[in-house]
Picture 1 (tube, rainbow, N blue to C red):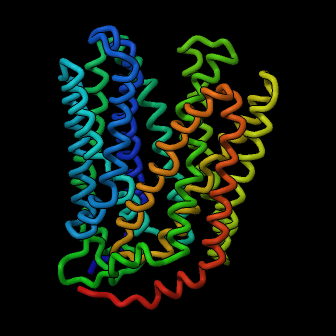
Picture 2 (picture 1 turned 60 degrees about the vertical axis):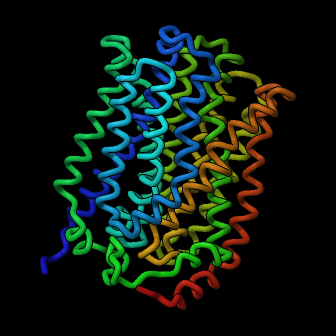
Length: 421
């Protein structure tokens, strides 16, 4: 047997994260061409919004079942196939000639993306020791924000120069090239030889390998708290992603393009915060992994204070600084939450566990947050809604603290699992 390579895990990390960026470039490029589609096809705002919402809906619904299939069929093969599917769907978007065709292409894109985050995360983390899990998880998840910014910015440039269809083609080519490179470089055998989490458990759970029961994903109280609390801690970042452009437009009198550019800088802060906060979580938990729980509740608390005070101030530099601090920490717990999830699940079904987490992230966080702000804004105004929405962190913190209290019991339950073929 060949010795494990020190470079290979980092190659996997770069390729998996690069594909995650490509995923969100393909998803968010649509936002850059909204005005062009509205003009060419005469679409309403609700129709435009549905082209975005259908992707999140499909991802939320299919994340868990497709993750379960990937755990059995093979994770590496699954991530390659998913990348090809969403890239082909992006090409079909470029060829669309009507709203109905574009809607169908976006539905297929959601199908391709549904389980990539969970399965890609499982592949990537299997290459590294647990002491790096929060850092790498934060960086991996931050790539979604970086990809969103690139997709909108680069998509707008390409659309202006070559037409909106070319923007979709460009994003599709990026995804297909990265999928091809991953297929050529990363194999199931190389993954097995370089595993760091549990060498005796194959990354692709074949029919004769030992597997943990799926019930272990749901009968562990500490793990359930991580799912729910982790999803709720993304509530605020979902709000900021959707509503910051409107905030700058309404309260700073910015034109749409300027408001979008200003919002992009705060999205980059969210991504940077996920990376650096994940590193911080690993640092403080180096001698005691349970300290990741401390990071998971501290980062949201900082964001809560900064955003509540910031949105309560008059417009100006001080307000922007506080909102920037809040944005930096608003998803900072994501890396710690993912690392805790990994520590509470058996490697053979870890992609499925991350699939449950993806479902929770969409239901309790990224999808619910913007919707709630819309309803509250109709009654209190957008600024009032943005000031009070961060208190959703209180619920997330309480749930995570309950999970911390039962963490030792959760680890004991994991250690006592009876594996089956």
